[in-house]
Image (cartoon, rainbow, N blue to C red; front, side, top):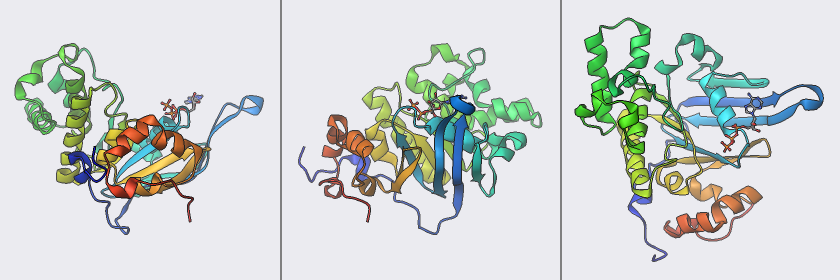
Length: 286
Ligand SMILES: Nc1ncnc2c1ncn2[C@@H]1O[C@H](COP(=O)(O)OP(=O)(O)OP(=O)(O)O)[C@@H](O)[C@H]1O
């Protein structure tokens, strides 16, 4: 491809929010240690991360560096050994007691739909659990989210086993959005999708981010979706976030993981299609 050519996906990647946009997630001096004594295993040490309203932040790092563990801390499902995690101004630990789904939507890697429920009941599950709304209101709300996720109303009565991988992702996304959460967490959103399905899902995420004013944190190994969607990239290595910045800034940071991830064959292929500011050697942080 011509070095100056810009693929449609990247040229439309969302612009980062202003530097003074409100903070949505604040992780301070976080440590996570599993086990005790001689079996103690440190996953995170002195980890800091700030995510502002409107960002789509991609969290990348090698296998086992603690990306999923960090997402679970942000969801309030687990507690770090030390440090603080604040979500929308409150401790993440309060999310679970207070109904995390009202403020944080989570899209799990394989969709995690309830196999015994049809599509519309999966989407409306969190509203149903609240037990405050009549069934027909929940049904209508779920139908709106179904269509928002790009699916036709006739899909509503299908069972998860009868859906394609791309449809499962969309139903899971509709379910994550049922309570209109301002923050959406995505674990490998394009894993298991073919390149077309992956591009379409990225387009959908981009549209929803813009129309709903979402803040998004996603864990991804997929460089195409990373470059198509991210306003910000945070790299987890050596037990903490070693660099946070725009994709163009992060690829220039001098660290073995970044060389391997962005400048290996796979990374070079993805970057070959990018605008000129991505070209050139990585440089050390000033
Ligand atoms: N509950 C737990 N008890 C003990 N160790 C755990 C627990 N949860 C995670 N770990 C360990 O913490 C480390 C980080 O796990 P995590 O799943 O967050 O990695 P990851 O960065 O998401 O990896 P991948 O990219 O391969 O999915 C791993 O070594 C894992 O085995």
